[in-house]
Image (tube, rainbow, N blue to C red; front, side, top):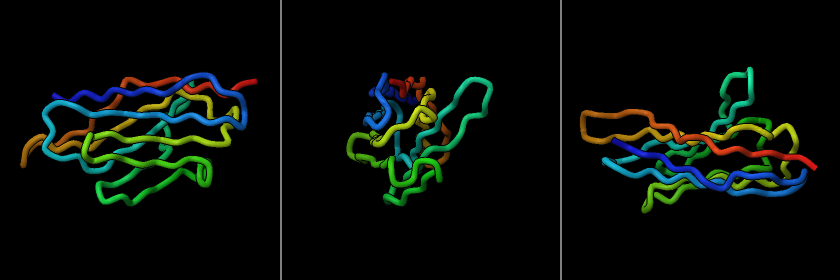
Length: 120
């Protein structure tokens, strides 16, 4: 079993910054791609950013230049630095990890979600 624990959400004014963290623990042999997604009510969950185990990153157009994804492989943690936040960034943010538990078992695991609210 693998557990994903997120932290760092909250209320911030437009133009402000927040840093999200997500730590994976449990039966982990290796973690491949990690990522952040977000969802607002009545809409589908959307990709925000991903990062491979080698450090290759990918961003949604809406966050390019404002958000930065990074990871620390030694502690199985992924981060999302969010700058210049806008009200439209308000959402429930989820982390996801593509985890290999053994040479034969590999699954996606999600965090519980952390709320980010951008409002004056």
